[in-house]
Image (cartoon, rainbow, N blue to C red; front, side, top):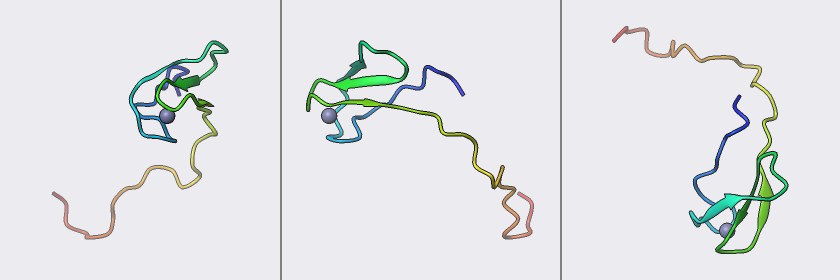
Length: 59
Ligand SMILES: [Zn+2]
């Protein structure tokens, strides 16, 4: 839930040369492909945490 969530790779070209965009607010720019994009937290998934009850064997 952090505002600091940082991408490791550009979602468009896959490069790692990312730097914060001047607008802030989760905006990043890629020095490799010159794209600017923004990360946004949309909310939690409704399914909640999974409990892995598929096998029935603990450990
Ligand atoms: Zn890129």
